[in-house]
Length: 180
Image (tube, helix red, strand yellow):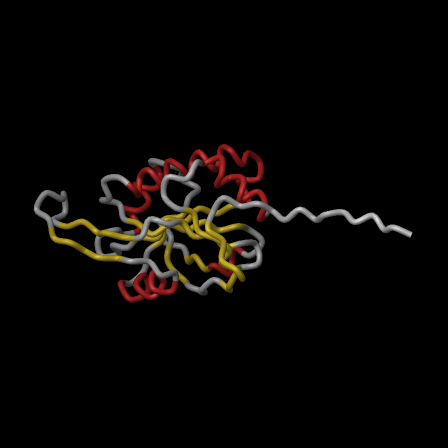
């Protein structure tokens, strides 16, 4: 007697998958409203994190624009995704500065900051490259070169994937839908 075998279709993702997923590093930073932001407080939601800074001339604002498009693509599911912008320039990017900056894109996004040590430890935990370069052409006298990946933490607090800069918002939204 023959048994019918049904192929189980594995989810197909656009981002770079971590195989196997690993527990995301736990951290506590301060958001743009002065409130504590801990990853553990967002279990059950997907968290998308990007490391950048408010004086960034190109990649950082473009990434936040992409996030607004991803949020629109997600529709009602967007409430279950938390978008977090972690500053790599905490000396300059105060919560007040982050609040003004984030509000230009979407006030529901989180602008996260902390001490230099806290931010540095978190960046290191995610393998984020950060290099402050003096430059008189910058409005503040320097630029910060940094990794341009977005990191995705799933509903169980596991670091599941990374999205490269410039990825289509529809593809990012597709990945996030599959994780919800």
